[in-house]
Length: 426
Image 1 (cartoon, rainbow, N blue to C red):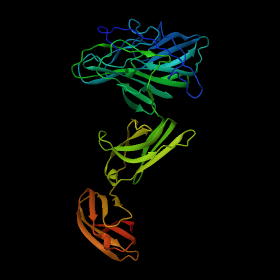
Image 2 (cartoon, helix red, strand yellow; image 1 turned 90 degrees about the vertical axis):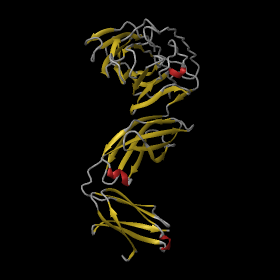
Image 3 (cartoon, one colour; image 1 turned 180 degrees about the vertical axis):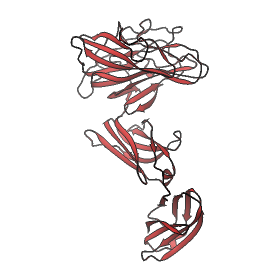
Image 4 (cartoon, rainbow, N blue to C red; image 1 turned 180 degrees about the horizontal axis):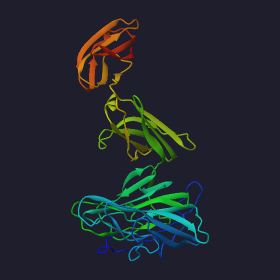
């Protein structure tokens, strides 16, 4: 979208209705062609949080009500709908960047309700499509983003300039680049994104925003939200719609659970963990529930010893489709309980052949002793070591001389038996 000083607009209306992306999900439903014009302030103060605008007769007998839900990061709403540029039948709010220079992310968000013109009752569409057109930048220091909540399906071009980031389950943000694509053009597929809805009478939140660097020029950014089917060749459908994603800390582990409502060409999930909310590493793979006819429930338990030494752990899901394309969930944080002096021990591999890793945490320094006992309680191997507060890792090697069978590994710290675990020698 463009600024007042640079925008040259021409909308190419490409409606090849028999082609790829008519919104025909499950019930062959064709999205209506809405006309968004003549907005009138009906409640609140124009441009402020709580302001409500009426767009009359977006289709015959149905009005759209748009309420300013939030204004964040220093943004401001210059106009709820500017038809000077772009396409007059689209919803085209103008959002100003912050008025002082600096690295920032700012936005204005809206709630949309559809009402019956005669009765004022909620009007439910079998389906409708919100297409954001020309999500780009100013060629220098500003790039735009859009987001819409609760879509049943999200479609982008297979080759796209947009970076897709979940804000929360089923709330996906699409961020453009600094590059400017002249005009507002429905055929500029790489800068477009379609949010498709089924059996809905509202959108709980829609965001229009900007990301700026430290030396940007204060400016108005024109946006184009187009409520009608927009063709997109070589399109890519985001394969998973999440109902929930959460994690719960227990005594010795974190249980990560998620539920999906819709999966298209999904192959598997990888659960990724971070201790700094920046660097994430995979801790396990969960295959897709290929035979599910409806909601699918997934779970993974993280009982790594290093997790128990932390106060906060972060998780996200990496979803991989059948073509190898990956998308990410939102990030969730888990606060772990205080250990209260408890020592946690973990052994691996188990069963073992020659080497055995003993990992444990302690709340203080001291002298540790590791013993391996046979099933009769007799000590076979004893090794002493100095232990330090926090995480400790001890390697026992040359164990191939042990006869195959079951043993017990025992951890003793400062003369007190702390933990016992059964282990198997192959």
